[in-house]
Image (cartoon, rainbow, N blue to C red):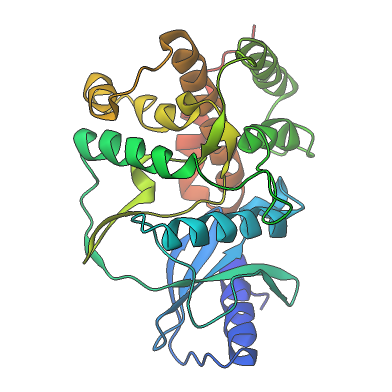
Length: 290
């Protein structure tokens, strides 16, 4: 029987880790989606193995390396982030065709998501530290501008099994319209890239940011929109906690782009997980075919 994506990723992570002196006799999958996240028990090491990301990011090693670089910088700066594993060099590895990175295991103290005040205040503080990230130095190198947006045309360029021609055209038209509305003259800085509440973890030591794979440069509205685009969140409370002035017009554009990005990613997830197809179709229906 052929291995699932998750099973193959776990096997590759255990094999690579063993070659680095990290033994895992009881690996546990913590999450499976864009990447397979596996705790290499009994070691305090977590492997992050590219999974669905490979469908739209053929250079997935570059994305994972940027994440390691930014997380290392933030860890040294004392910011509350999930750190790379101190037991393994902070670089990417390849095993059996799987690209991966390794992280320190932190136990989750609660499954409850962060509230709006926590999200806004922590994002404000994170942005303050990121402004000093040495992105212009030869190493670790500059961050690409709004890199996650490239996922959308990359997804639409793939052979499609779930999108009709009309649906693909509707998504492409929305992408063209919304990216044209971005103000390219607005101030830019290093960003988390995917700073939604799902990437704030309640660890024993308090709230910590994780999953910097989408780190990039751009307007702060891109990061803020990761939370304010969620209709289940109190937008005003997030903005009040963030505190700094945010361009309302550009925030609205970024919120729409966030929703478009989410639509594309659920389209990818639905290819692997049949139980997510209804949610993928619901999101797709928000971009009606003309």
